[in-house]
Length: 67
Image (cartoon, rainbow, N blue to C red):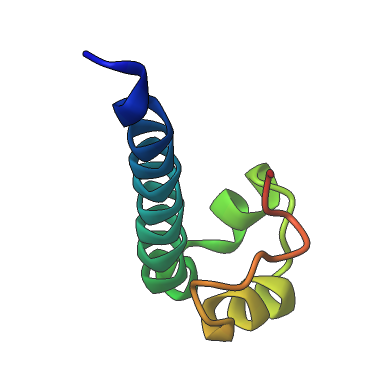
């Protein structure tokens, strides 16, 4: 592979990471409202926080979102 392709491949890798992160946030947002209070407590969220996170658009990082 030539060096001319390296920046393009780096950009593709960044996009893949973004899409994986967005998909994980979207999946979590769908699952949060159906989790039990015990499960939410295990992950450190109250019911109110979980519902707020579930309403957040998937492209916006939440307060509990790892970078």
